[in-house]
Image 1 (cartoon, rainbow, N blue to C red):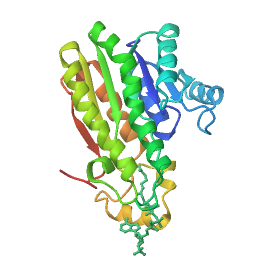
Image 2 (image 1 turned 180 degrees about the vertical axis):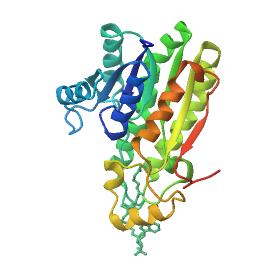
Image 3 (image 1 turned 60 degrees about the vertical axis):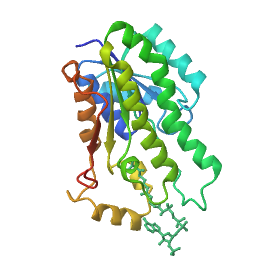
Length: 248
Ligand code: CAA
């Protein structure tokens, strides 16, 4: 048991839940954040399901696209559970549309949920991490932030922006024991992928040399690896995990 407090945004989703499981298995005290009012965000049910799987994790409702709400909820977690040493920014949404059809609302929603959230959460925790001389911040980006994707100008911009943020934060944290890294998953078996129309999904699958979509656990074990004490020399990296879909 490291006893370190790990907060995972988007923590009750398919990939987020798997991340929580791996962090708990590594001995951390895990807190998942989820967006109140969404189907994935039923705290009692989620916590009970984790107990049945043999580990404890807590849930706090929080709209991470809202700066003030995020500051309030993360401060409450630090008071009620303990200082946050590990932050995983896994919350993300899509509002896919070609540029000629994309509304300003679709643009803003995606930038707020995917990118503003990374600033809001990091802003709360990075000072304490630096003062204590230890921190791990892991930002979940996407292969589509690295290569672009038809119909995803908003999503790709938010995900590419995440890595710019990571590189800058990594420079600020480096002397104080705080590492900041990006993970760029490819297409992972999750509801987000299943929402892509079948004809597009089939074309995407054909572009993946390994010949399948990734598994949530394959992302989660990389998160746990980066969160470990022993990973302190890895910072500012963007680690691809995409079945060979984008190499380089
Ligand atoms: N490449 C090239 N052309 C494409 C295309 C593609 N991938 N997809 C559609 N088109 C073409 C169509 O053939 C059509 O051409 P014509 O006008 O010549 O007939 C035209 O674009 C249709 O344009 P529309 O604006 O009408 O597009 P649409 O509204 O029918 O659909 C879309 C647009 C919703 C973006 C749809 O293409 C789509 O769902 N694409 C998949 C997007 C995707 O991969 N999202 C990933 C979600 S998962 C995720 O994001 C997780 C992660 O991190 C990896």
